[in-house]
Picture (cartoon, rainbow, N blue to C red):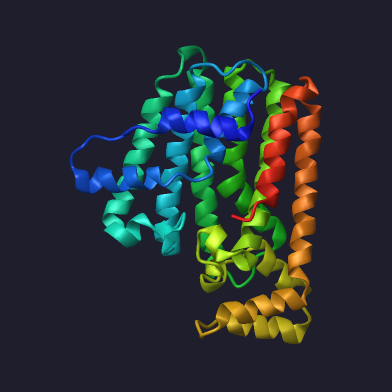
Length: 321
C-alpha cells in the first residue's frame, strides 16, 4: 500500500507533461503554468487510493486521476474570477495576471481535456465513471452558485450552508474515491461507505479551510487571510457567530460586514475570538471527521488497506495550509 506522499510523487511524474497545444500560447501557456504551481493533489490521489483500497492500482486509474485534477483546476480558475481572488497557491491568479477572458477560456479547455482523459478509460468502467463524473460536475457548479447566492442573502442557516459545502467541496472528494473504487471492482455497499467517508471528510476539510481563512498564517496558507470576511461570505464561522452572539455583538458584526472599512478583518476576528468561534470550529471539524471514520470502518476490507486513507484524513483536518 502506498502512502499519500508516495502517490503524490507518482502522480506528479505522470501528470508533469504538457496537456495543451502550443498555440495559441496566450491561451494555453497561462493554464499550463497554473497547473505547474502544483497544489496538494488531494483529489486525484484520492481516486488512486480508492482504487488501491480494493486492488492494485490499475492503468486506468492514472487518466482518471488526471481528469479529476484538471476538473478541479478548472473550478479553481473560475471560482477565483467569481470571488475576485488576487492569490492562489501564493501566486497571482490567472485572471489577475492575464485577464478574465483568458482565465475563462483557460478553465474551459481544462474541462475539455479532462474529458479526453476520461475517454482513455476501459469501456467496461467508462459509463459508470462518466455518469458519476458528470453528476458531480453539475453538483460542484450548483454549490458554487449557492455560495454566490448566500453572499447576497441577509442570513443563511447552518443546514443550508452545509448542503452548499457538500455540493461545492465534498462531492468531488467523495466521487474521486468512488470512481477509483469502481475501477477496483468494489461492491455497491463498499462504494457507498467510501463515498460517505469522502463526503464527511469534505465537510471537515471545509471547516478547516474556513478556520484557516480566518486564523491561518498567510505565509503558510498561500491565500489572502480574511478573504472570506472581505467578500462577506457566509462561512461556518460567520453563521455560528450570528446564531450565538448576543444582540449587541450581532448588531456590531452585521454593521462591520456591511462596510469595507479599514481594519474590517481584524474587527471581525476579534468578535470571533470573543465568541469562542475558533474552539467551536475545531469541535465541529472533529464531529465530521468521526463520521467519516465510521464509514471507513464499515468498508469490508482488511484494516491495513485503510491505513493510508486514515492517515490522509488526519492530515487534511490538521493542516495549516
